[in-house]
Length: 199
Ligand code: AMP
Image (tube, rainbow, N blue to C red; front, side, top):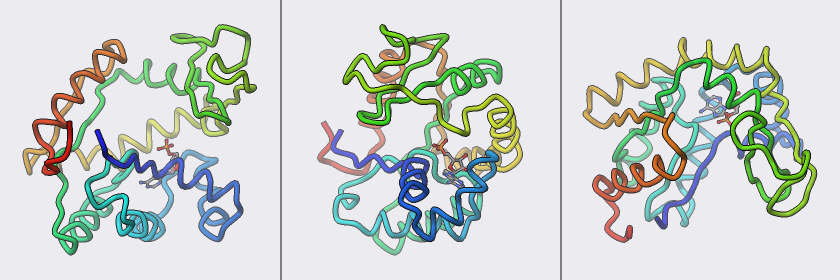
């Protein structure tokens, strides 16, 4: 859809891997499943949305996760003459979230995702796409996943109301098949995006 995919989790994980100053500061929070402080996140996202490839529009994956982040995002976008078009929320029962995260395996080479319960790889622990050895994210350990769900309820759930009151919140049943969910998202994004170049 010609939208830049901006994942704060991916950006933080590469900062940790590259041992940058941000990575060193964020690492301990991420390992525990806690949120990285707002000031660090706002600086990170401000850098990214100022880049040329974000100008036609971007899909923000994992940001904002607090009301403060949502407010700062609005202010940053306003300065650039942009705005948040819509906020998509994936609705899932906690026990499904738990299995999706604790059962997830990722390919470190091509980023493909698998799940030992729902979509296991064809060959044991090897990526179907490129053959690399699959890994489990450190924060997908069961105890950390439980904390991430609790942190969501405590710190991120209030963001729903922030967008609901602006009539921008789109809750989606995320238990349907991935292809079906994708079709529904495409429809909503096409209908509500302020960028005219989407197909
Ligand atoms: P994710 O890949 O989106 O699940 O993010 C992985 C981890 O990165 C989270 O559990 C947080 O520790 C951190 N993180 C990612 N995005 C944010 C954010 N917007 N605010 C605070 N921490 C974040």
